Length: 281
Image 1: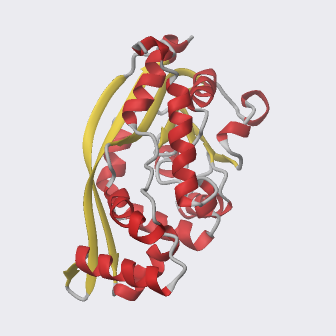
Image 2 (image 1 turned 90 degrees about the vertical axis):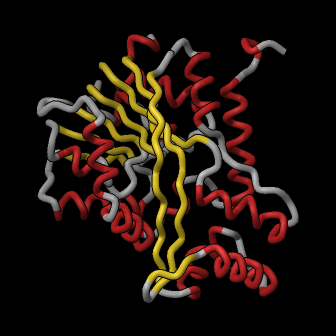
């Protein structure tokens, strides 16, 4: 088989489906229906202000810019961006995330942010959006199995730029799953598609994106091991006492003590890919 014969969109879809089957979460948005979890995610993200600032500073934003943020979560980028541009539209399907984002915008006095509570796959650009937008962003929100169709719609919604942020290699939070899945569930953990597959999908579409890689520090803080177990039990699909003990031993061995609590740390390679939409029309 030659390089040109590979259907990279099918590769992405296959990896996505196997990952979802492993996680058993029903898709990316399903785990963020809880408003409490969404608020915790926002608070954790607000501790990483430098990362958010660097991401926004790396975008060609102007005071007159219009921005579309796909999979905006609790507004980590959308709300700060709204303070710097003319208007922002955020697409976010998870109820908890959308509610927290709306509250966050209100707390920050942001009034030029509109929220579309749909999956990107279900969005009709003509009916649901107020585009085209100068900048379209999807920041670590590429949970669409048909990534080619998702990107084509992003290009349709943009008048100038598309920016995608994704991961390369094994993320720090996936490592534990790779280590434990055979012991917990009797089979290997299947990772989702990464930036290599994404680049090849874009290339097969005639898009040659700019690519920039950087390190992302991952840190989680817990008051004690019981709090960590409460957080990771669902993520690791732990349902039995035997699985509980396996996970507890692993967390105790991999977490480090920090004053009166525990730290879970790691480093992940993140990738920014961006292009002008003339490259995909």
